[in-house]
Length: 164
Image (cartoon, rainbow, N blue to C red; front, side):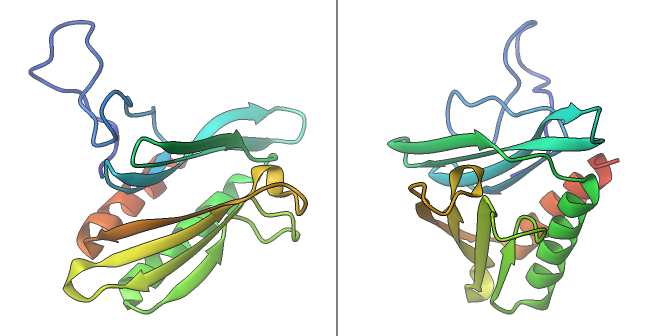
């Protein structure tokens, strides 16, 4: 779980090394990756709407290489994403269970994240993804095994630095 980085030993033109599942290249910053190669969630900037000055964000998750989901959120202000990441960081640092939506503008929310402390192993996650935040759409519930708190905090700090 780290920000995108080049693999110094890779041949020219090769995909950079990635902490993601095999064959999944690391995206360009800013992105936030929670999980490991077995089960993960990634939130990354997908594009911008110049008219509204809001970004679209791509939510991608995968479970054991057998089940995956990926879709773009409706446009969100960067402050919404910054608020999400800041609250996520505060919850991890506090070491207590918490629940956090991606955005709080209205009830149509594409992601709700539940974090549960797992002692010295860090935090585990349960997430619910709902494409485009539609109440009538099928949703995906997924669990992510515990990740060390130090690793999570470093990942979130990198995301916040790149979110300018």
